[in-house]
Image (cartoon, rainbow, N blue to C red; front, side, top):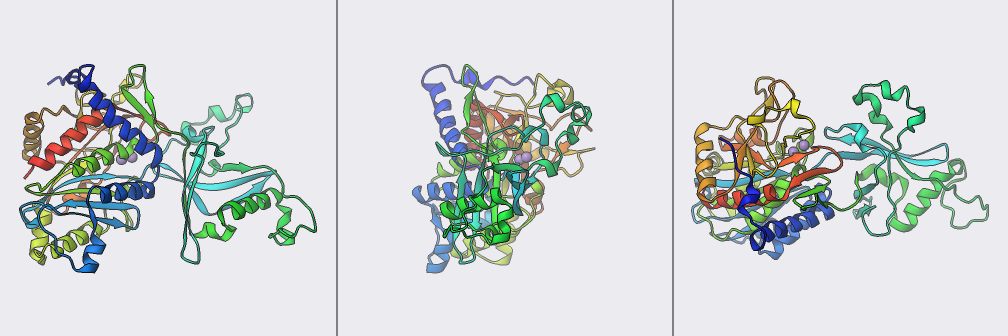
Length: 473
Ligand code: MN
Ligand code: MN
């Protein structure tokens, strides 16, 4: 049952370069796209270049879809569904690659800006499961949007461009940390203390300053006033605009090669862009498949898949109905069949075995770096609770596809029994009666600001996804 190390399939030279080249595309992608919105804009633009048409426009113009056509639907700028229509009608099912594009981070609160002891600060609420103590004393960047009252959307991206300033959350000096270091790790840094320092110069007090836009009493908070002046001048933002903003605080800086042999990548938000990217690249590789290929990228997985842009919304079902309608094959029954007859690789990151922390895993049922695409028959916690437990028959079919296409794969579960657990989007798609299995790429430091993946696992995931889209029927 021992799985081989996938690097052995790629000896130095041309073969290994393939792995590195694919990984370099991914490294650039995650360096540039740090939020769900940035992923959707970049991937939708890539898809357009590759011949995908906007489903919205197809509906608007009343165009018909046929086998081989490529379409995509954008869910509020935070989710994406891409289709390559198969030779068989949709009611025979789809081969679906699903992954999420939201990652753990801190979000600005709705009324975030305040001044304290000559610092201007931004109040945050963290998003997803994080170890709060990992997010202090790091260079952080602000990414997101501000929706202005006039309907315009201001793009925010500060801290990642060359020459940009960065921001950060402070931590106590060790000299005064006697009490702090006695605390439990969960309490060392409290959620309400994850506030960002963003400035420290007071606004000038010149009474005849004609450019002064703050009312006289606000000048009491001069550092804050000065920051508002900068925001107004450089970004056209006034304080009330924060009310309708979505600004995410993420680690600043590019993803980097990791290790002397450059076999790994350290970056922010591998969870779950390390599955989203190869899923997307796999559907780009499809031309007129037998069965319709789908790549489904969703938001809000890290907070339970709720909301209009999460997997629990009807977005996907509605989109399938529209695609079928444009293909002239829609009926309520045909839609039900299309969903029920589908097969899914619901991809999310797996916990990689960590030699520094062997005690939470069992060696035989852990995921390892370098052993390829991971299949988790089930996830869940406490007696598999909350898990989508894939059918043995489906696992058998997938083994056959992977072996036939010489894709390295491994099987794993998330840690030892009763050690913890986690959920994915798999169970939501399984509600339609689809065949669904959790799969994905192993990650070290999961949910830390800087996570690590293996390049060969990323490449095997891509190859596995292509094989699945071509063969699963
Ligand atoms: Mn996660
Ligand atoms: Mn995830």
